[in-house]
Length: 199
Image (cartoon, rainbow, N blue to C red; front, side, top):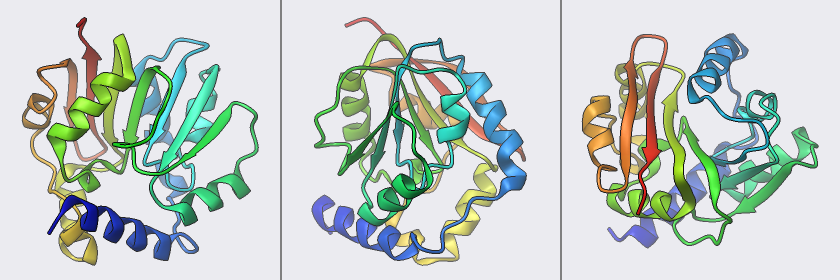
Protein backbone atom coordinates (compact mmCIF):
# COMPACT_ATOMS: atom_id res chain seq x y z
CA UNK A 1 0.00 0.00 0.00
CA UNK A 2 1.42 3.40 -0.94
CA UNK A 3 2.16 6.21 1.49
CA UNK A 4 -0.50 8.32 -0.25
CA UNK A 5 -3.17 5.70 0.40
CA UNK A 6 -2.01 5.30 3.99
CA UNK A 7 -2.17 9.06 4.53
CA UNK A 8 -5.72 9.24 3.18
CA UNK A 9 -6.80 6.29 5.32
CA UNK A 10 -5.32 7.90 8.43
CA UNK A 11 -7.09 11.16 7.59
CA UNK A 12 -10.44 9.40 7.20
CA UNK A 13 -9.92 7.35 10.36
CA UNK A 14 -9.36 10.41 12.55
CA UNK A 15 -12.03 12.46 10.79
CA UNK A 16 -14.47 9.75 11.89
CA UNK A 17 -13.31 9.93 15.51
CA UNK A 18 -13.26 13.72 15.85
CA UNK A 19 -16.80 14.24 17.19
CA UNK A 20 -16.36 11.81 20.09
CA UNK A 21 -12.61 11.99 20.73
CA UNK A 22 -11.82 12.87 24.34
CA UNK A 23 -8.52 13.11 26.20
CA UNK A 24 -8.56 12.08 29.88
CA UNK A 25 -8.45 15.01 32.28
CA UNK A 26 -6.76 12.60 34.69
CA UNK A 27 -3.66 12.79 32.46
CA UNK A 28 -3.40 16.60 32.64
CA UNK A 29 -0.65 16.36 35.23
CA UNK A 30 1.39 14.08 32.96
CA UNK A 31 0.94 16.52 30.09
CA UNK A 32 2.21 19.32 32.35
CA UNK A 33 5.22 17.20 33.25
CA UNK A 34 5.94 16.51 29.57
CA UNK A 35 5.96 20.23 28.81
CA UNK A 36 8.29 20.84 31.78
CA UNK A 37 10.69 18.22 30.42
CA UNK A 38 10.79 19.92 27.02
CA UNK A 39 12.19 23.09 28.67
CA UNK A 40 10.69 25.60 26.25
CA UNK A 41 11.99 29.17 26.35
CA UNK A 42 9.53 32.05 26.41
CA UNK A 43 8.59 33.56 23.04
CA UNK A 44 9.34 30.28 21.25
CA UNK A 45 7.71 29.20 18.00
CA UNK A 46 6.29 25.74 18.68
CA UNK A 47 4.78 23.23 16.27
CA UNK A 48 2.22 20.89 17.86
CA UNK A 49 2.27 18.13 15.24
CA UNK A 50 -0.73 15.83 15.05
CA UNK A 51 -2.43 18.18 17.50
CA UNK A 52 -5.86 16.56 17.24
CA UNK A 53 -8.44 18.61 19.11
CA UNK A 54 -5.75 20.61 20.90
CA UNK A 55 -5.30 18.74 24.16
CA UNK A 56 -1.75 20.10 24.50
CA UNK A 57 -2.62 23.71 23.64
CA UNK A 58 -3.29 24.90 27.23
CA UNK A 59 -0.08 23.27 28.48
CA UNK A 60 2.09 24.67 25.68
CA UNK A 61 0.51 28.13 25.83
CA UNK A 62 1.45 28.42 29.50
CA UNK A 63 5.09 28.64 28.35
CA UNK A 64 4.25 31.99 26.68
CA UNK A 65 5.18 31.12 23.09
CA UNK A 66 5.30 33.71 20.32
CA UNK A 67 3.31 31.32 18.14
CA UNK A 68 1.84 27.83 18.32
CA UNK A 69 1.48 26.07 14.97
CA UNK A 70 -1.36 23.55 15.18
CA UNK A 71 -0.51 20.94 12.55
CA UNK A 72 -3.13 18.27 11.88
CA UNK A 73 -3.89 15.89 9.02
CA UNK A 74 -7.56 15.45 10.00
CA UNK A 75 -9.66 18.43 8.98
CA UNK A 76 -12.43 17.36 11.36
CA UNK A 77 -10.07 17.19 14.32
CA UNK A 78 -8.69 20.61 13.49
CA UNK A 79 -12.20 22.07 13.14
CA UNK A 80 -13.00 20.81 16.64
CA UNK A 81 -9.76 22.33 17.94
CA UNK A 82 -10.66 25.71 16.46
CA UNK A 83 -14.07 25.60 18.18
CA UNK A 84 -12.56 24.77 21.55
CA UNK A 85 -9.47 27.00 21.57
CA UNK A 86 -9.52 30.71 20.79
CA UNK A 87 -6.07 32.23 21.24
CA UNK A 88 -4.43 34.64 18.79
CA UNK A 89 -1.09 32.84 19.20
CA UNK A 90 -2.47 29.66 17.60
CA UNK A 91 -2.03 29.32 13.83
CA UNK A 92 -4.04 26.41 12.41
CA UNK A 93 -2.15 24.45 9.75
CA UNK A 94 -4.27 21.75 8.10
CA UNK A 95 -2.59 19.04 6.07
CA UNK A 96 0.22 16.51 5.94
CA UNK A 97 3.34 17.64 7.81
CA UNK A 98 5.55 16.10 5.13
CA UNK A 99 4.21 18.45 2.46
CA UNK A 100 3.18 21.56 4.43
CA UNK A 101 5.13 24.80 4.16
CA UNK A 102 5.83 25.97 7.71
CA UNK A 103 8.15 28.58 9.23
CA UNK A 104 11.22 27.42 11.19
CA UNK A 105 10.39 26.48 14.78
CA UNK A 106 12.22 26.35 18.09
CA UNK A 107 10.43 23.14 19.05
CA UNK A 108 8.34 20.48 17.34
CA UNK A 109 6.17 18.38 19.64
CA UNK A 110 4.52 15.13 18.56
CA UNK A 111 2.18 14.13 21.39
CA UNK A 112 0.19 10.88 21.16
CA UNK A 113 0.60 10.84 17.37
CA UNK A 114 4.05 9.47 16.52
CA UNK A 115 3.00 5.84 15.70
CA UNK A 116 0.82 7.17 12.85
CA UNK A 117 3.85 8.57 11.01
CA UNK A 118 4.53 5.46 8.95
CA UNK A 119 7.65 6.71 7.13
CA UNK A 120 10.10 7.49 9.92
CA UNK A 121 13.06 8.49 7.66
CA UNK A 122 10.80 10.98 5.86
CA UNK A 123 9.63 12.35 9.21
CA UNK A 124 13.23 12.75 10.40
CA UNK A 125 14.16 14.66 7.24
CA UNK A 126 11.10 16.91 7.53
CA UNK A 127 11.77 17.71 11.19
CA UNK A 128 15.39 18.46 10.34
CA UNK A 129 14.20 21.11 7.89
CA UNK A 130 11.61 22.46 10.31
CA UNK A 131 13.52 22.71 13.60
CA UNK A 132 16.18 25.40 13.97
CA UNK A 133 19.73 24.31 14.91
CA UNK A 134 19.78 23.94 18.68
CA UNK A 135 16.00 23.53 18.71
CA UNK A 136 14.10 20.52 19.98
CA UNK A 137 11.98 17.74 18.55
CA UNK A 138 9.92 15.82 21.09
CA UNK A 139 8.04 12.53 20.85
CA UNK A 140 5.78 11.96 23.83
CA UNK A 141 2.88 9.85 25.08
CA UNK A 142 0.96 10.10 28.32
CA UNK A 143 1.22 6.31 28.78
CA UNK A 144 3.86 3.59 28.41
CA UNK A 145 4.74 2.11 25.03
CA UNK A 146 3.23 -1.24 26.09
CA UNK A 147 -0.14 0.36 26.74
CA UNK A 148 -0.02 2.43 23.53
CA UNK A 149 0.95 -0.59 21.44
CA UNK A 150 -1.75 -2.67 23.09
CA UNK A 151 -4.42 -0.09 22.30
CA UNK A 152 -3.38 0.05 18.66
CA UNK A 153 -3.32 -3.75 18.31
CA UNK A 154 -6.94 -3.96 19.47
CA UNK A 155 -8.35 -1.40 16.99
CA UNK A 156 -8.30 -0.48 13.31
CA UNK A 157 -5.43 1.85 14.22
CA UNK A 158 -3.18 -1.24 14.14
CA UNK A 159 -3.14 -1.08 10.33
CA UNK A 160 -2.50 2.67 10.40
CA UNK A 161 0.36 2.79 12.87
CA UNK A 162 3.84 1.47 13.61
CA UNK A 163 4.42 0.00 17.10
CA UNK A 164 6.56 2.08 19.45
CA UNK A 165 10.05 0.70 20.06
CA UNK A 166 12.43 1.33 22.93
CA UNK A 167 13.18 5.09 23.08
CA UNK A 168 16.82 4.59 22.07
CA UNK A 169 15.78 2.69 18.94
CA UNK A 170 13.28 5.35 17.96
CA UNK A 171 15.81 8.12 18.63
CA UNK A 172 18.28 6.37 16.32
CA UNK A 173 15.92 7.12 13.39
CA UNK A 174 16.78 10.81 13.84
CA UNK A 175 20.52 10.40 14.43
CA UNK A 176 21.69 12.04 11.21
CA UNK A 177 20.04 15.32 12.25
CA UNK A 178 19.35 15.20 15.99
CA UNK A 179 21.08 14.17 19.19
CA UNK A 180 18.92 12.47 21.82
CA UNK A 181 19.42 13.89 25.30
CA UNK A 182 16.39 12.60 27.25
CA UNK A 183 14.81 9.15 26.97
CA UNK A 184 11.99 8.03 29.31
CA UNK A 185 9.74 4.97 29.19
CA UNK A 186 7.72 4.41 32.37
CA UNK A 187 4.15 3.44 33.21
CA UNK A 188 3.35 7.16 33.31
CA UNK A 189 4.91 8.38 30.06
CA UNK A 190 7.00 7.77 26.98
CA UNK A 191 9.29 10.69 26.16
CA UNK A 192 12.12 11.41 23.75
CA UNK A 193 13.80 14.83 23.51
CA UNK A 194 16.02 15.40 20.50
CA UNK A 195 18.29 18.40 19.93
CA UNK A 196 18.80 19.61 16.36
CA UNK A 197 22.48 19.53 15.51
CA UNK A 198 24.14 22.18 13.38
CA UNK A 199 24.23 21.51 9.63
